[in-house]
Image (cartoon, rainbow, N blue to C red; front, side, top):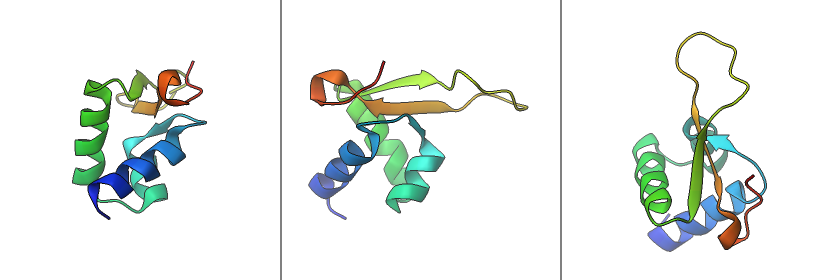
Length: 77
């Protein structure tokens, strides 16, 4: 996938629900480094928003989740 195609896939995937990097990687079929790079870039530019998963009850650190920013058509609250 090229850059614009990757961004479009991420926008579609994240417009209606929060997902962790692992979930994005699995659902979009992208490599871990690709997901890490694009999430960081899109958060820095205000296109994605991030949060710590609020209902994490497992051991260890709660995963960071991403969603499309409302200004870009997302439903993140």
